[in-house]
Image 1 (cartoon, rainbow, N blue to C red):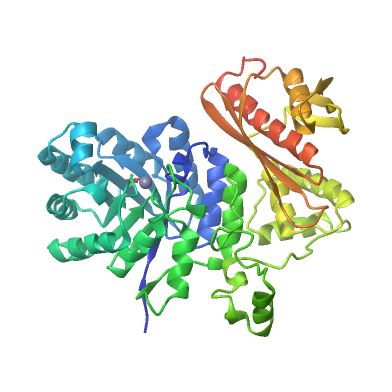
Image 2: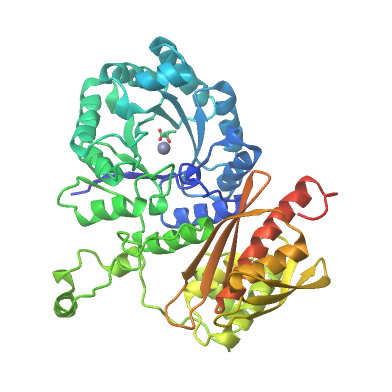
Length: 514
Ligand code: KIV
Ligand code: ZN
């Protein structure tokens, strides 16, 4: 029997980005959108175009880059928001406008200061306006999880009549409990006379750790779209994790009368990409994508799995994209082999120059590390971003660490082709290197986050460092990878500083140092 489709609406680039500190640049969003498309995500919410010119440009860039998934832009129920979303999505193959207004008593009274009647009318007007841009319009009654059901029914019936094709029920503050949320979806579908004219969707936040459970209860009650994010990224405690929703539904087909169209083998690569771009590490015991999700420690379990995998595993690791580390390239591999492998990984370098640059880095890495894995290649291209010109380049780094002594770093940077050297003492080797770099550049940016992850296993593995820097209220992430984590740290710092500098140069070409 053919199952109904469960539509996967990914909002990593919108709600995920609302996670404090998870801001992404336009190019980073395009890379994630391409990975989501490869996973066959049905709808990609690319951003909130009215929020800032950067958000507008990102939605526009994702709309241009993506062919197969629907690209969605968020808009409050305001004309200017909807027009901005319509304009940003103009070039999308398939576009959706997602408009919302709050319907809970507390939001209407305290935040909007509007009467319920005025909210209802504004919702209808917003949907009608959005329909001028696209036939694919989603409406969300924000804070539906704390709204009165009678009022919700009236609003939803009216917006479906006005042309909304998807009705999304958000548990905005993560207040609901699974049986209650499932019952809400069931009763809305039963009570609203035109409910069959729209797809019901849910959008659950994780404040009580119930976002996935609530979403699944809603699916059991007839919801056919789930809004979720990679690694559960999102505002406050996050959103429902895409990987958990997808694998729960796929694994328990005895319980669910629908399934997604996802290529689940793309889950782990996508999770890694999001983690490395945002600098939010994935906890080892995280379901599906955590490093320990398929690791068996106890002797009894290991013995069981060796005899029959199903004794302790309910999913196959390779079905969600875990692979045995495969040596893919080595010291003697040529430029073509690199290009082909990158293409197989879904990475298209924009120009021959970018390939040449990646090839030089690849050869440098292969000199130090005999076995190059896919993950190493991914990290290698993460560092080369078209958005950040290499204005500051690491030429030389020497750090002296000794028990009982403060580490000293000597750093030489090339700044616009001119070499500068400084020495600095720090609390640790990375701190010393950062002080020397800061001294050369004269930067006053703030370091908000510093995180190190090992890319593969083994003591010769590359460490991947992500830093988050803040300058004049704007946040930039930098990445760097190397078998030496002090060098990886310096590269990540310079990558972030180059992004700040490049942005500044674009905005004010006459400005000097960061
Ligand atoms: O959590 C929420 O209510 C939202 C809406 C905009 C759907 O993110
Ligand atoms: Zn949300």
